Length: 476
Image 1 (cartoon, helix red, strand yellow):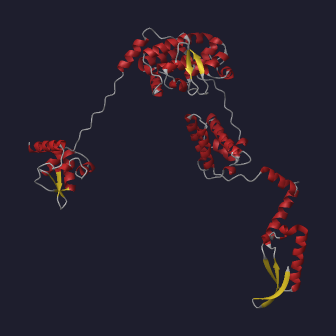
Image 2 (cartoon, rainbow, N blue to C red):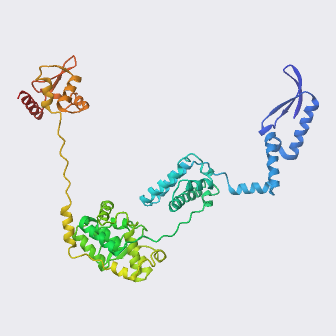
Image 3 (cartoon, rainbow, N blue to C red):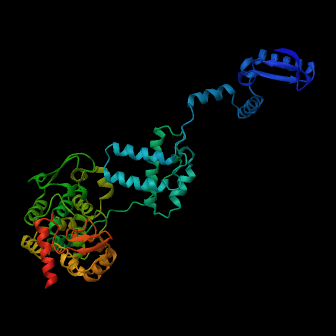
């Protein structure tokens, strides 16, 4: 560094040209005396010799921050080298991604994975509840306390709260795989415990009432009802079945229709075969259409509205089948479950005598006749009557009095409303160039409209006939 004497604003000063200033850029410093300039040059030279050019060119603020953070590391028992090694091992900071964007990526990934549309819709509704008010917030800034507060402050029941928390945990596990943060905050939130409640079932008398109501009022729903009640199929599986997939020995549940995505063969018992034969004779529909509404109506006719637990048909089959055969492996194989699930939920639900009564339910001798009578009683839908045209050619011709009067279009429209009872919009539309009676109307240079005594020269035969009928009706 060179010290030179020069004028600055007309005053003699000592100038130092530092080629390695802050951030390695050239810097010019001015001093009042030569001693100050020499002292600065010695300090800069010592720093460069001791720490190198990089440290000596650091701004004073950065050197102060380095010294402060070095003291913090030493007080915590860390060395600067160990802290740098840990930072390099962890990698760079995760990107700041808004929660709303992560949710869209998450749902798109689930759709692309080929999950059931029903599950994706349910998952989307659950996750979007969590996004409300947090869509633009970076996902790395969401804390475990915020997730816990979301689950508690909405007043949900324990089972609902647990279900929503599971969905949130699934979302954050997806974000963890995408490396949007280092620590998963959802892992610090504990799931609430839910009391294990026994599955709801129906008694043999209630099952008979439901079957009778189906025969007498909704025979189209009998096939799905029999498959769930006496075959143990899930409702979603039974609704998708076709009659060609039901054989004399087995019901073939294909993988793309099964909830578990695994093909299985459900044995057809003599009881199930009897009800399926009755359903065929009753012309029950498979695949089912509008089964939910049909089942709701037949439950009302059975007098059990509001008394049936969820999935009562399938749960009843599992309970009665296990009580009769005492073989969880066989029951699980039929239902497409695990033996552990059957033993944990359906053991000791009913007594063997009740199971015998349940599997003794067979169609009565008049079952097919009752189903046929129910089909005849159902009223057939009548096609709605065709709407009558209010604005006829005769009505339009009448307001002009056979062409003897010229009217403004607005006045003609009001007269047409009074004559036909139509809306003003329809009347004005009928009197426009696109109106269906415009071929019989004439407009002069002043904008007045009148009815032609003769149809237009280019009119078609239907228009000519329509015009003649209108004139005849007015003259009469």
